[in-house]
Length: 304
Image 1 (spheres, rainbow, N blue to C red):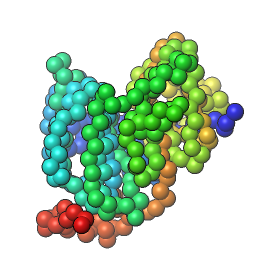
Image 2 (cartoon, rainbow, N blue to C red):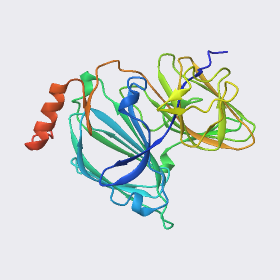
Image 3 (cartoon, helix red, strand yellow):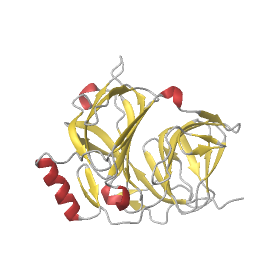
């Protein structure tokens, strides 16, 4: 039996406004670094009011990171400086490696009932790969395999592997795993994780408990009290759990089904210089990036 990862921190997503006025919930971002290395940010943009999202994210640059958008409801229209155009809908994924620089736009569109739902995760790139050629991957619902563990869990494997089934997004620098997990009531989920990797879960429905031990030692987080009951809290919608090190994650459900995203990646361990949509290692590199954007030199010529 492996070492079960205990809870290190519990966060509740907080309201934020991004783009041209999109109202969303932010699970973590700059102030939580470097605890989430190699991940930088996770936004939850589920909404049922079009006024909260229709203004979208007009054309803007990225450099030095990867952005991963996963849809549950509605659609997001995409365009970028590589010439890609398209739309992702429920169950689809957009994995964009900004690398040396890309300029793109993302415009959310609700379903017929006005509902929009999805998540955007930012993953850092190491210094040696920050200026790699940009690339864009659009992965459609039918390309993402599902694994039924036989123990009450069904897992969509976007990236990484479950019981020998690999997700369609591969060859990513930080060796990430990105899973969408559904658990039935009164079930137990055990999933191996590489020791030394950062692992977190973000709950998007139902309630569950994690691990075999106590909750986080620090009961204060962002000025709010963590939900710790008897040392092992119930975790629910909009809770994010950062795990301690170990080689497996264990979760239990009660009388309700539960759904959560389970994400892991290999830490980079490098300095982070971050301003807006650009993440580099030094302030000088940031200054160069923004100067190139102002002067029209941001998009690098393709390698020969």
